[in-house]
Image (cartoon, rainbow, N blue to C red):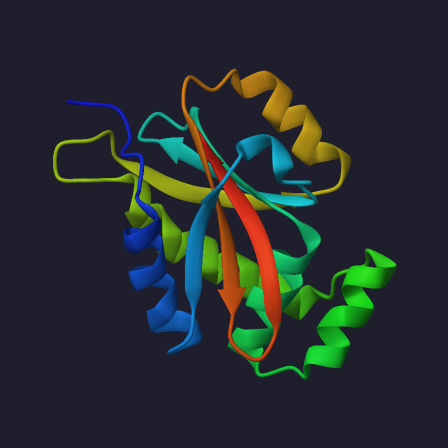
Length: 153
């Protein structure tokens, strides 16, 4: 069984367009450009950390706002304050659960979303992972704005 899959920008765009609608655009970016404020923890069947998907404040706020149909201004306020509502975190969990399919295939390691984390816990998880691969994306969410995330595994 191979490890996890490194998704293409096209694959990410196709997946996220189903969530955020037409006009969703995705491009590859340098992984070091993602200023992570939240992350999704993916574990293998033994419960061991297998991957992270860390995102910046705009992706966190805009993805959650788009799914909950929250006004753009509310998302912008959360980005400015660095304080994200329970609803935004719940919607981020949903997005990250769906995104787990981007890094799995029929022949890859099986993973599942364990939980999402914020703040200092993100840096702690990232430092403990020692990823052998990473791939990052900029996502333009229609009617909201641009954010970034990085898969590390």
